[in-house]
Structures are given as C-alpha cells and as structure tokens.
Image (cartoon, rainbow, N blue to C red):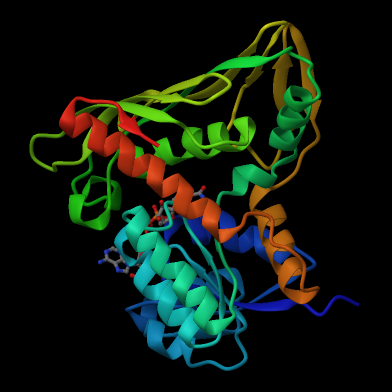
Length: 325
Ligand SMILES: NC(=O)c1ccc[n+]([C@@H]2O[C@H](COP(=O)([O-])OP(=O)(O)OC[C@H]3O[C@@H](n4cnc5c(N)ncnc54)[C@H](OP(=O)(O)O)[C@@H]3O)[C@@H](O)[C@H]2O)c1
C-alpha cells in the first residue's frame, strides 16, 4: 500500500477549493490532512465541504502541525516566497502556485531555502505534466513537424473586478504574471533552451497599474516564440507550433478539462488525449518524488529561469528595447 504524503493547504483560495484539493484527494499518493485560513470559520467551512480532517485559524498553526509533511501554497503571488520559505523552515516540502515569485531575484531565495532545509520546492505548472503536453513535446522532438521555428500563444480573459488579486499591482497581479507565465514556461520547455533576447509591449490599467494587454517576442537559438496575454479580452487560449514540415495546435492548452478528452491537431489530424486531471497528476508526481526520493518533475531552478523571462518582458516594455537573456 502507498504511504501517502500528508498535505496541508495554505488559505482558502478558489483554485485550491475548486480544483487542486479535490484532484489531490483522488490521488493515491496524497492525503489532504489540514487547511488553514486567516479566518478560522472559513477554514472550518472549507474543511467541512471537502472532508478535510483539520482546520486552522492561522497559517502559523498549520506549519506547526508535525503530522503535515508538505504544503500547497496558493496564496496571492506576493505571498508565495515568504510563506514557502516559512514552510520549508518548518520542515515541509512545498508545491507553490505560479508565478513562484515577484522576480527572479526573489525566486532565487527559494533555492537558498531549499538548500538550507533540504526540503523540496516546485512551482505548480500543472500543464508541464499533462499528457497532451508530453505528447506535443514528443511529436515535436521526434521531428513530426520538421524543425520547429515558430511558436504562437494566446491566453486571455476579461476580469476588471478591483477586488480580484489579479488586479492588485502590489500583490503581483496583471496578465503577464497570471497567465503570460504559461506560454513562457511552455516555450522554454519545448525549445529546451532560454531565450537569447526578449521584447515586450505592455498596456496598463490606468487605475490598477497592472498590465492588461501584454505581447512578447522571445528569440531562441532555434526559432521564435510570440504570445499575447490579457486580462481585458474575450476568454481564449491556444498554442500553435509551426515547423518546416507541419504544425501542431494545442486546443485547450492551459485549462484542460478533467471530464472530457483533450485534443491536439497535428496538421489536420485530430489526436485525442484520454480524460485525465492535470492537478491530480501534478499532486501524484510531486508526492511520489517525495516518497520515493526521486527527481521531481520540474526542478526549482526552472522557476528562476521562468521568472527571469518575465522580468525581461517587463524591463523591455519599460525601456522600449530588446533585453538580452
Ligand atoms: N494552476 C492554476 O491552474 C491556477 C489557477 C488559478 C490561480 N492560480 C494561482 O493560485 C493563486 C491563488 O489564485 P486564486 O484566484 O485561487 O486566489 P483567491 O481565490 O483570491 O485566493 C487567495 C487566498 O489567499 C489568502 N490570502 C492571504 N492573504 C491574502 C490577502 N492579503 N488578500 C487576499 N487573499 C489573501 C486567502 O485565504 P484565507 O482568507 O483563507 O486566508 C485567499 O482565499 C495565485 O497565485 C494564482 O496565480 C493557479
């Protein structure tokens, strides 16, 4: 029988309650043991709804629970690094939501925390272990579209709610941090390289100060990647990979449903990927890495590299110049 990893959840975030906790509860590798909120009643409500045995009225109490081995951190972006460090200092492994930090410099402090404590930290890019992405990468790397030369991505939604964390500049809000991080991680992973130059174009909300329309060009040694992300456009997501002999489109690249197959287009041929839950896979693989002392699916240094590209897009947009990688 599998000795499940015992997880604690920081906060009562929507993504945790709606997707990640139920998915991890279905994983043979995870036990969701406790949830904490700044408000005990909220934690108790979430615990009752999701059948979680322990509820705490502060994050500190959760970290002091010696039965909890690993923490899922879906706090607003500006709290990712501080609470992930507190969690590792309390002897817990950490699965932290994207983007892992507010900058590459801040992300590097997680590497110090990992090395100091010997605990694992991983950025929760669930897309990177979804079978549709493993298949896309396999097709590209085995030459099915010839040489990959161009990637184009879109990830957009409309959200102008001033109370939403995505519209708070000091929380690390904005389109690039919230969703632009996805085409960046996918492009770096597919090209298996870091961009040599980055160009960014950014439009900001005049009141919130967050970026609401961001377009970037990433120049890799083997080809280009361009993407647009927005918090003020009709909802849409797509990734297209264009090679010398063909193309692949990933139809629902990021919010892949867990109740129907996903589809990728190889030229005009539809390839169906069987139903799965990317959050369950993420929780299982990270827990298995902990339990069996294996390499985790996404190394922590990858998160620092992703933040480096995010930093470069911001820097390019504010200086109207290419930023070298
Ligand atoms: N991987 C994915 O598919 C995915 C999808 C959506 C979001 N995310 C990421 O997950 C994180 C949470 O996103 P979300 O939309 O789920 O957030 P949310 O619903 O706004 O929840 C954030 C939680 O953080 C806690 N919190 C602590 N300090 C806070 C503060 N000063 N202001 C607001 N909340 C505070 C709150 O819990 P308590 O009140 O209970 O303490 C709150 O419920 C973000 O980093 C986001 O990028 C990932």
